Length: 256
Image (tube, rainbow, N blue to C red; front, side, top):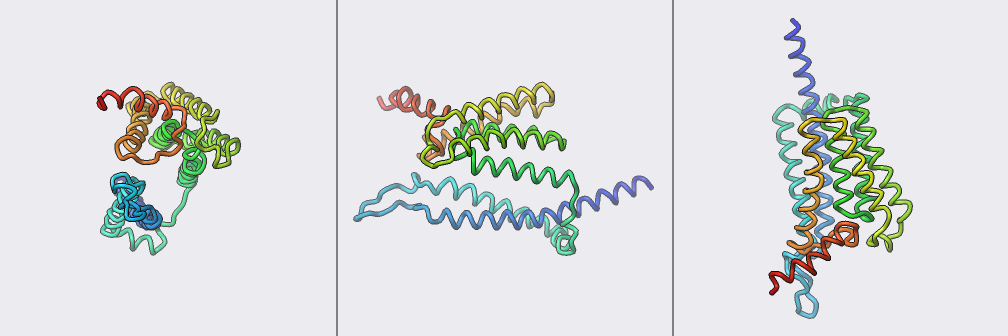
């Protein structure tokens, strides 16, 4: 009897999950289509002025956004297909996908706070590697185990330096200048990493610092020096040093 009851609860939770996957897939598809439409305004094949091409297609600033949002669109379509095949659409339209509980509400709000601060406060003003490293660390540590207190803590840890950067350096004229907000984000990142490693001995926690450092580092260097894209905040604390040593010390080696 207990096994049957547990199986029934599991099936019910799975149906609820697929119903929410249906709504989540629709939101993801809508966002991807919107940003693909906005990205289409960026010249992709180069601008022609007086018959002279201003840029090659592989140098276009549209390549990376197109790639990201096409991947998001495909992910949304795959998730939608899986949800429909599993009966998620039927359950969603019956209202089953709209269930709510306190822990889920906290998780969604914490993620919303972190991503909003990351996009609107950190990315324009703070070094890309530092801001991304802080957010990656917060997302992995805060949400991989499902602890509510961790979710709230990491949301605060990301929000405080983000609000500092937003308030102290709001004008766009100051976005690309080295500022104290880089150091504030670096301090928050280091403190969160130390706290995580002291509290969590899992394999995921030990791997998080490597992921948080290497992922944005590889991405930003590939964008800047491989695809020749305009990366955010080139004057940031870390990227300015990477760019300087690339052009002054590394590039001349193969130029010769």
